[in-house]
Amino acid sequence: MHEKWTRWEPIKNLSKHYYVKSISDTFSGGLKIKLIDDRDPEKKVLVSWPNSVDAYRKTYETFTLLTLSNIDKQYGENFKGWTFFKIENSEYLKWISEQSCKITDSFNLKHFCIYSTEEMVDVLSCVEPEVSIIP
Image (cartoon, rainbow, N blue to C red; front, side, top):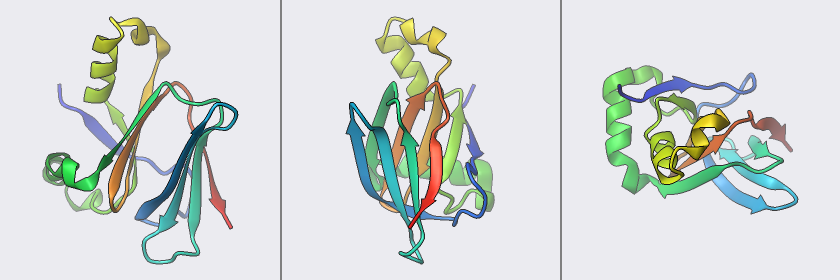
């Protein structure tokens, strides 16, 4: 079975496409991803997992061209340029399961993806992030 990508709109009135301004991962603050609207730098979003996450990876867009091509073929214009996704039947989750000798299978992990202008950030967590517009 192939991965199933779903557009994710964690809060209303998000812009279509953002770029990653910063990623911070600290013991006391968890994982925080600051995003800025591609067209309006005054529009900023913070996606955070205050209690940290189980795994994440950041990949430059150049190294995700096959993924981008597959998304375009499978989902068409509806997904083009969108930033926020959830992924079911995730290859990343399968890899984590194999690497952990299936220990993570009981964690009920979800795969969140932020596909920005220059990079893709994949996050595995059993909890939804906090998402907010920031000044």
